[in-house]
Image 1: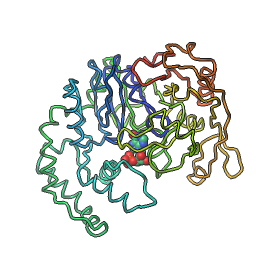
Image 2: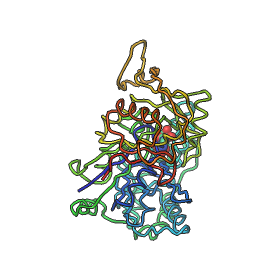
Image 3: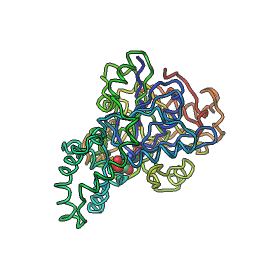
Image 4: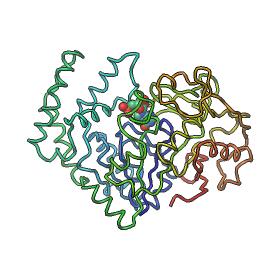
Length: 427
Ligand code: IMP
């Protein structure tokens, strides 16, 4: 019953696609359990580069069944265009399964996301503008539209009308926008229904049966721990639970079934959107990390904010997710620095603090306390085992492991599928 959760240990964009894809060959099911097309995975297979937003990265592994769980929010137009893009490149997508309970990102949810951000002005969250937050808000408010609703026109119409009732008041009276009619939304959604139908399934039943049959199931988190609605840097977070518990609710699998929780950890730190980021760099080092690491959002094309590794955050991720392992990514990006600072604690209002403060105010005031580790200049992209790494790179990894509270079981030394050092097998 091997059920693994693979999730971002920082603010997302840790290189999860590469890690999931690495395991893809030996995994029977890859399941997304939260988020939507706000995620962005880049997967490099041979000389081909794939940018996925909504689809689980297991879609690129022929033996694997990709699953969109009930906790995901699905924009049908994005889903269909991502599928046809892959089909045009010869990728077979016929095994995809989509939960009938997953919620649909409707056109009005996208509109509300964008106008709300504009309205917030300086206080905006810096969302991806894909309608994620408003769709989850509708879910919680019990006015959401689910995938299964596409197959009952009269129910769909009633639900869209109910959802638009209040929204149109807000759009017209507060935001000065035109009202959206239920008819136009229903017509658009029904236009997708037949194309999506072959994929719709009772994914909860299928996944639990798969686990009973000893299949390997990998739960793939979008975004990252610090973007979690409960455990992240609220309010500068996404509207779902990327943390390990989210895999249970977002896929309908009990916590007793999860055997391993792997945190993907970048060898430095990045973040997109607004919100506190203690180790952020505003100098040439930050610029260099961005340039060498290719730190530009796969989904939004926005430059990512860059900074040194933050061990306080890594320790926090270990705790709230119950991490059993880390997959350290992008170690090669640090090649060439003579000295590499690592944040080991914070200074908050003159006091040294070892753990992430729960108070938003304190976190906003947190200043990094750095320890500096010696760097390396040798090319590490061909390293196949830990001992192939230069001594200083080995020491950097060991220091991160010690500070972060879980073993580093794999290390990414380049973007390609085979540019990974495996230390402990995940299976
Ligand atoms: P939303 O998920 O579009 O609502 O955006 C909320 C916050 O999460 C913003 O700061 C986004 O930049 C951030 N965010 C959403 N998805 C990702 C991701 O996949 N990687 C990194 N940041 C993300």
